[in-house]
Length: 409
Image (cartoon, rainbow, N blue to C red; front, top):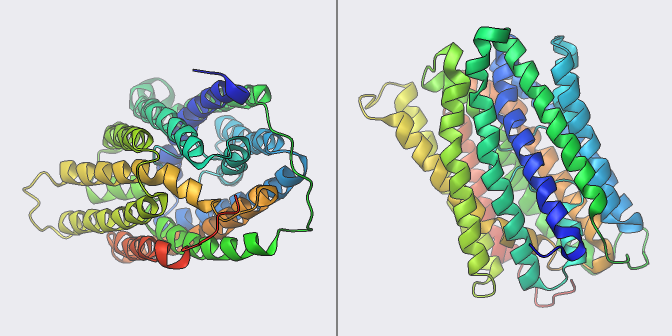
């Protein structure tokens, strides 16, 4: 791989980051349940996670506009690394809560999870100003992250084999330690990045044209983020409850469910990368978001049948895993276009602040995970249906809210 602006090291960073964060994102709700927290209590823990992640993202984004996005990326890696270390060192429930919070283990455990961190989209937009090249670079990062996510799931399923040696909680703690080491390697890789000189900041916050576009993108981020928060952070635990997975092999089953989804994400992103320049990025972003929502609704139907005993003689677990993989394919196909659209109408000097505020909108709205736990205790499939409606709506509104005639990026 050509090492332009240290891009190869950015890929290496995303590889190690993805393995660590996928394990942590999949394993954390299972670990919290192992420590006897209820679904509702776990949902409330994730409210704190979303809030911390959102405000960290805004601070690092504004810092990046003034001092460089490389610095944002480096500083942004410290929190998850420290969180993983705390989870590895202590089983105290309060310290575990702190560890999960500062690790920023939020959102969906999808193949793109490790590709993006505070400053990532802004760094890519600033370093690769051409839209076609930008989409290809983002596609490469998503592919690398998705393939690496498979190993994050393998790390999770290995917990079932370590239980006889260390016990269930001890096995999780040992693997959190492995995740902390991987995040440290990712942290070191980021020092090898190069960055274009930052344009002088001419406004205190951002230019008016950037602000107008950012507000519309943020509105869509709120809808999508609320849908994700309702349906996805607790999904590994919801799989375990709905399908009555054995306690000593839950991690094994969850890992096997998610591995095909990461492969599907990589395939979708690779196809998108090959078609870069041939498809309208706004249409791709819209269709991908709507497909995510509709497939999430179909997953809810399968959970409903399983949870309430309809057609349980069918291989519903296999069907659920297949539908989730299809959703991951759509997410991978649309990821680079969605990221490119998010900065399409933003001025170059405002990338960091604008993308961070978008991230703030998305992360704060993911605090709907607090409601998710309560909804799931009333009816387990309910969060999936609610999330499906919001995600589908966000995709439908994409071209209606973002029909910019002028590209200022």
